[in-house]
Image (cartoon, rainbow, N blue to C red; front, side, top):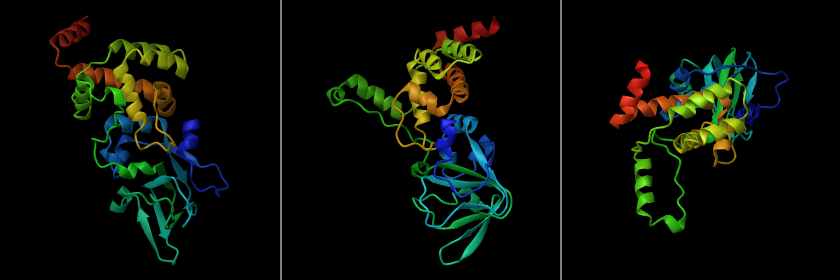
Length: 262
């Protein structure tokens, strides 16, 4: 629920009803610019835990000159946009314009009103700063270790996406079994931290610019809390399987083959 409140933070507060929500699909996210530049892992994790807001015809989505901390996308329906001078135009979810946000600045430059039932998605304004799938979390290396050849090599492989460190399948198995018992975040984090590679990946996903958040995530606990338990489980399993298939080490491939045959 905390994530949902953060997700819809900054929206118009004059509505007199509780808005309906609906599922977000990976296909719909891949149509949006520049959201579609993010990896499937980040999009799937976001879609699993977040919803789009559904509004009836005649509702004000946002008002001109109001402050905002979110970029608003139109997923379904038609909206009318009018500026402070009274000039207006309509945007339908089937239009090419709908691939871009209806509004993405610190202040809304138009007033948006739903002309039909609409589905809208609000994400962090930071999404507008991404340019490609290569958007990565910056590695912070302490000054006293900046001359370390090992860390320099690690950082270079990290930025080049060449880290070939397989994740432990046991972590995914343990997490799936544990979550069948309705565990909390603390218990999940204890399992995930057995694999530093997965922990680091979760932190990277949690710092994805889709999420409306005031500060970056710096720990595995904060990452799981932001992403959500169900999304975390799905992502851990996905990463574990993906890294096994990507492995170039013969003994790992043979081990995986034996497990499949048993």
